[in-house]
Length: 189
Image: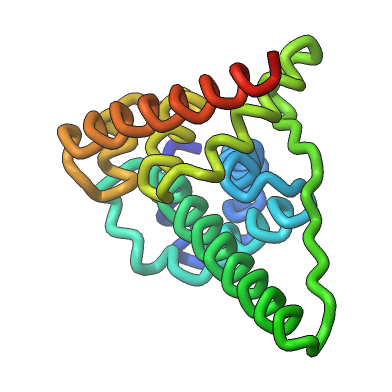
């Protein structure tokens, strides 16, 4: 089934086409979301939300881009929305703690991306922690290009900004990461 046939079948509500879509793109969506939210259980939930959103909004898909690009866009949006909600809950928990209403519970787990080889797990956990400190646009651009392996053009389409803006985001992300990682490695000598 080619992409045009898949889109037509999806727009007609074909459940087999939707199963094919999920099977074909589930790893891509999950890995993208996981790179942003950095919690496996949360990434699984968000990835499911991505496919639910895709199912609901497939009738609005015009075919201006590849279906994978469209799914990346949904995945990034859902993952960033999840992060914003999580930060909001964390801030509310902190306020509750400050005013003695309850205790804030913060889960900071070691994050390991499934695509990272065993000997690089510790280094990747440090990198992913540093990624969380980047502004969201820089984090998304870096994730799509360096972790997901997309090119600047596809990333530009997904993020709906110019290639020059992507280049600028990548430059700033690399500088910010370099500064964070230099500080980390110098303090851990």
